[in-house]
Image (cartoon, rainbow, N blue to C red):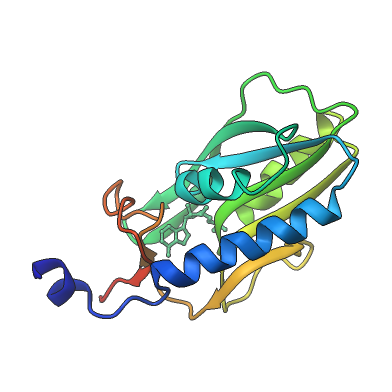
Length: 174
Ligand code: IMP
Ligand code: MG
């Protein structure tokens, strides 16, 4: 009850998230049919989306996670820090999965790094895309929902590490 009063109506409900993840799973499965695929999840924001999405993909799909961070509170610091581990992407197609396409700085850095590690191709799937100016060189092949340029939380998206476990997406009032 208290949570509802604080957050109001969800921007994206959990029923709509479930439906969209199933649809994306079908499209991605058919796009990569017969091709070796590594799904590269960007932690921590994509945690919930990644887990739900990869369970819709064929069992031979490999999964890796990198960690990126750039936000302090409700604004981007402009500097992306990235922890990549020791991934080898040779002979594999890579699908980057992230929570949100905001400025595009994070995705652009990860895309470059994935190509430098020998990926045959690199595509992007984001759950959300903010309606704002992005890095023009980036175009996610799959986008779940286009949303207004507002700060959002839930289903993996956080404010200083909190609210990731909300089952739906909410705009956070200023
Ligand atoms: P970008 O590099 O500016 O595109 O920022 C991307 C990262 O910032 C995303 O992967 C998110 O983790 C985080 N981020 C951007 N917008 C929001 C938001 O509205 N809520 C929570 N996290 C966000
Ligand atoms: Mg993120």
